[in-house]
Image (cartoon, rainbow, N blue to C red):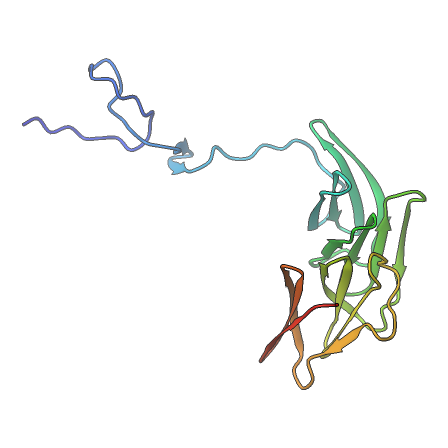
Length: 202
């Protein structure tokens, strides 16, 4: 029996002849003395300067939104990169939440203010009062839900109108404090520090 050391990086060539490689690895790439399961990334362009804070792909609009520093970019194409600044936030650091309803409106929260980018005619980017400090956002059935930071409450918009918060469109976790909002199958799940409640508009 002849023993031969098998290399772990190389092609997957099944040849029987010694002039062909015996190495057999799948989806592995030698990079800087190690191996990776992907070939790496390459830069295709840059947007502004500052912290990358959020990214959102609008399926309905056919473009992407990226928040870099305090600037909101609309990316129309990635090859080549084609973008424009559509708005400015009051803050430059920290994560932002981005959601979209079914009426050409994209809502953004930076934990300081609530903004709406309307990309249909007439185009508009403006901030709106939600009756508290906006935190995490979620969307279901055209309603945009806004957690009010540091409280047990949340509010939600009129259907497909991201700028309108009717007085009755509000909810609470009672004695619990809101930690997160998530959505699944037209339901909004309001996560507290001790409980989770499901919410759905009818």
